[in-house]
Image 1: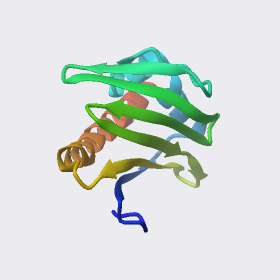
Image 2: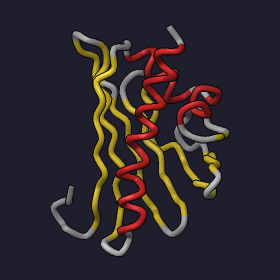
Image 3: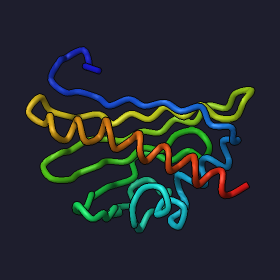
Length: 136
């Protein structure tokens, strides 16, 4: 998906989850749960908090930009030359929570990062759903 300027690209993923926003929020913001579906981290849902995500392929430096419980979570994502922003929006509906996720800021010359994120977020979102179902 391209933005209007054509200068950067955005990865957009969306999942319908059968869980209420409160439960989804916990999985997005509690350190031990984040580590089960995303990566090892030192996360706190506090705007301005700087944290790192750690994976076998490297580290991601992040900073919380917005954290409104059960509504929106946004953080910067800097790794291997990529400077982007990840934003989660929680939308309560009849069947649980609609969870759109956007990662913005991929330059035209960052094809590998863009493709990696496009594939990687599908894996992470599948794991997120597994973590939520194991919390029943």
